[in-house]
Image (cartoon, rainbow, N blue to C red; front, side):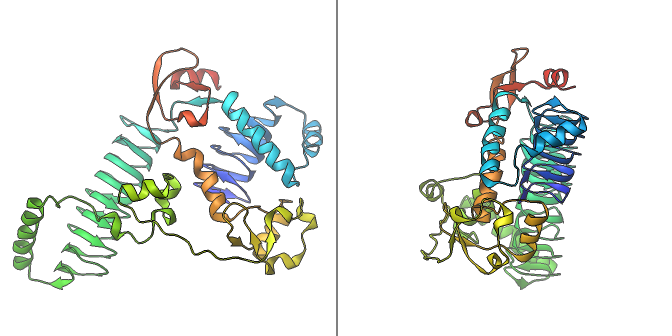
Length: 387
């Protein structure tokens, strides 16, 4: 149950955390060890229900304790109880909303760039979840991109209007292309160059609609196709949503940009209506409050999610993990858990105009009013407040 986390070990239920060990229920924390319910903490160890800490140890609610006092106090919270965890989760988010200081953006080591969740980017504008890239615009989720525009989930150079284009160069309107060059309108192609309108091709050159041509024939025909598409206003348009592999509600887009069925159909997406199946199994609400009360036979039973009515199971290795860390069994379907966990990040990808909580100057930030965060600060004030 980790979402957008990297280099974590023995951790559970975390969002946007990096380089941590034995973290539980943390959000936006880095280089932390054996801690729970942290928000925006760095290089902390044995801390609980805290926010904006730097280089701290044995803190609870941002208050310092001795080592002995810390572990004694921690036991009083009864973290092996599901009811306690849910109560603490609500308190945790109350502290994030009311007490934590929020930097205007989540960007790290950027130069002449704007957007949110950027890491080591240069000259990147209106980009989100973007890393180690240069000279890009209107890109969402990418790594090591250069001179590109309108891309999603790519790692290529000199591309435009592409999705999941990896290690490519000079491509245009491609979907799931890998190591392709100088091509357009490809779908699921690998190691192709100078191809147009092809699907499922590998190691091909000078192909149009999966048909082989000579170089001269290819160049002449592509030029005619391009002219014809421009006349009809089709050139430059990405594949239509009606051609998507799955319905909007079964896509990654639905996780990042939740939408109703009516809204998705309005902008041309497909929507899949899951079959109604009456699963027979254990109600999630009836699971034992603590992992100690769970028997081995749980791995052979269905558990019915109260929100989705879908069934899910607990694998033997999963049960072993919960027991080792004294974690209560999850009470909802794994897809539902992922949606809820990722939800805060979906509310941080649109520019907002606001006022710094401290200096009162107008600033651009990325926190939706729906989050109800109070102490949003400009970068300078944030750095002054969070030593």
